[in-house]
Length: 486
Image (cartoon, rainbow, N blue to C red):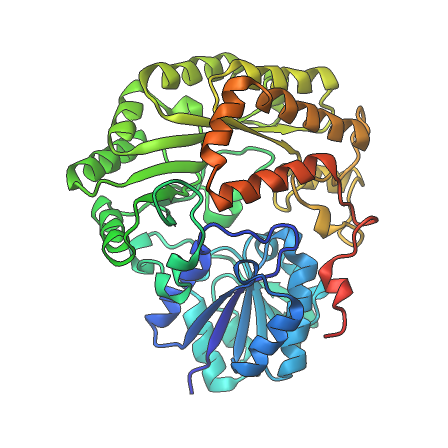
């Protein structure tokens, strides 16, 4: 008998406003459906679920396997989800995938006894094989079979240890199929931009850059892998015909890294006559942009790009291995503004190790100087798998056994700096936002976009709350503790 599986986006307290269905779960849903498995997807943040709601859901619908998408900030929430799943059905098989178990596979299984398995990196290739074995052997799949499943993290009972199989990065992205949009009813998600519902696509996976704050190469590989132009157009046609989309986001980690591919795709979108608008919100590298590429992106419907700038200081740019200079940032940002009407959102980070207050002000002042319509100023966090995380571990600034995973968000201080107190770092972040957003033309633009848009209003309120009311673990009891007994 083939097992049924539930894929879960866990409760994220304080981060429970979701704009678009989770692409990772939908791609995995397609891989499993294509092999004949019964699949359901539950988006707890979108449904505003409590743990009691989650328990009732499992009691009403029986599943053989429950899998969770897990970022590091989800650590405690995912474990509580898994405990509830075991409480409802002691025979259920629980597993977690995503960035957190990909970078800390052994720790995740040893620290979450309610999890039976975990997964590193992409699961589209190995998960169907794993479920076939579960259907044949139940919970007693032989270790000799488990050892051959790429990316699987499992407990070797004979050796008394956790085994993390090497991950596999599929070279043929089209073999994964298109996301199983029907599993999450995308038309029920709130629009974040003008023009109707909002959808996300990926055209490439992978990133070759060694930036010290980012773990993308470990999650999706260092090699850039492409979908064919026609395959992307096929998805866009489907989304327009079935869901009547008007706008979408390209969620690639480095959409413009391969300029020839990006140019050909944009030209194909223009020639297709689909008439869709799009943006690139993940973070385009400014040094990858040319006037020719910007021109065809705008013609194809690009309305906005987010540019990963990080720092306004060349010393910090060198330390984080961004491989770009501040002068290049200025030159490219001005080129985009002069040659197009594409809006630019700047992503900045403050609080790098040994970064001085003066260097942080370099970043704030650069943000004020550049022709940006929006800016995010995030506090540096030690994401597992990054060089920053490893450095903090080596220096004893964080320890796996004591780290507060709930605070591993860009509005919280997760480790102590040598030159700045937590309070001063918070104050600098607040000053950055206030100085950027209190300028009249920015106030007008934000107000114009916000009026009548529930999603943007929610995001704006959340940012204001973050700035003026810090909620640390000492001040705030999380839901997994408030609902410890459900």
